[in-house]
Length: 101
Image (tube, rainbow, N blue to C red; front, top):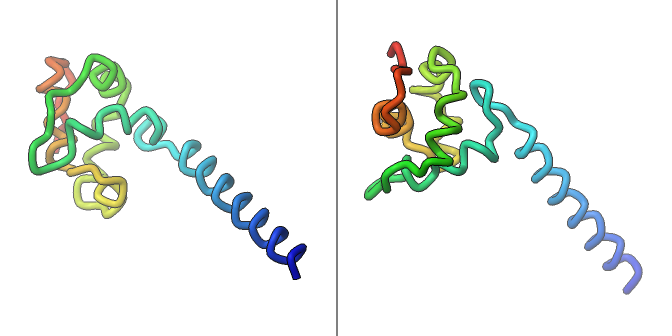
C-alpha cells in the first residue's frame, strides 16, 4: 500500500512539472508567457505599477495586431492580465508601437 502511495505521488509531481513546461512553452503574439509575466505587476488591477525596463523590452517584441485578437479573449484574464491595461503598455513604455484596436 505504501508503494502505491509513492507511485501516485510521483505521478502527480510528474504531471505538475509537465503542465508547468507546457505553460512555459506557450507563446502569445510572439512572446513566451514566461516573458509576459515580467509585465504582470503593470497589468494587474486595481493598482498596476509602472512597467519595468524588462517589461518594456518584452512589449517591444509583441505583435500588436495579434494582441488585439486577445482583447476580448479569456486567455489574458486567465493569466491574471487585464487586456485593457496590456494594450496601454506600449504608450507607458514610450514605444512607437500602438495597438490598432
